[in-house]
Length: 79
Image (cartoon, rainbow, N blue to C red; front, side, top):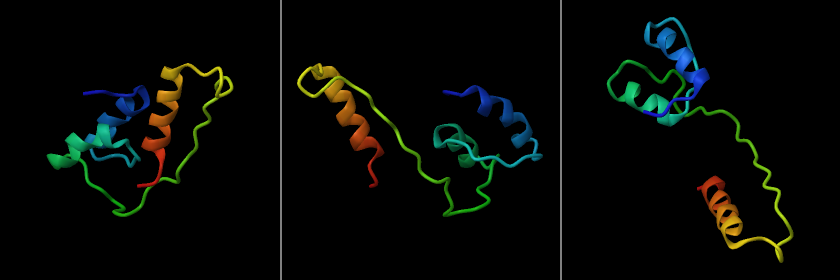
């Protein structure tokens, strides 16, 4: 399982039932599935953020950088 350091530090307290946190889906999924964590506010989520992608001008942008920009645009667009 992938973990981020701040999330990994919070998990023991959360699993012991002495904390509340907003966790990324890839961290929480396993614990939600087996009932070790519960969703306290269904339907609520953190506000969205933004991503700035600074690249050379479109004329000088390598194809792999363009592909990455297109991936981010598609991935982060509202569904």
